[in-house]
Amino acid sequence: MTYAISIELTKNQYDVLKALAQREYRTMGNTFAMLAVHGLGFYLTDHDIAVKKTEADRDPNGNEYQYYTDQELEEVFESLPLIQ
Picture 1 (tube, rainbow, N blue to C red):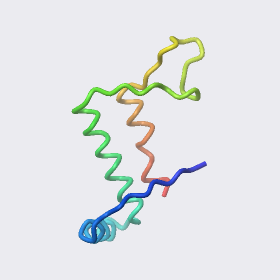
Picture 2: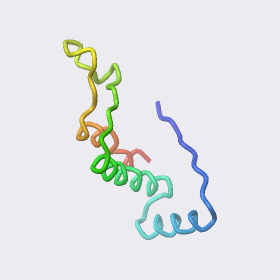
Picture 3: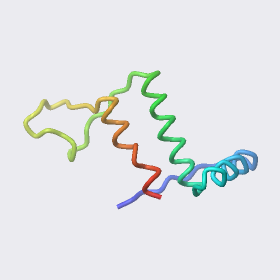
Picture 4: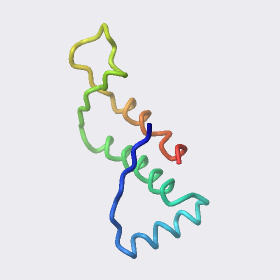
């Protein structure tokens, strides 16, 4: 199952994103996803965050409180641009 996210852009932001997408030979959604993933990497570098693991990613024999490492969070999203 996939989920969609909608964002509002100004005309200028839309035009710039469209031009960037064309230059990179990508769709606009693919380009924005790529930028979001790269931005996530920078965000994780600058901020300490704690995200509890989903049931699918938890170790059943592990601690009750299991959190993703920064590397694991990056891996969750690193293939995002390829899903378009």
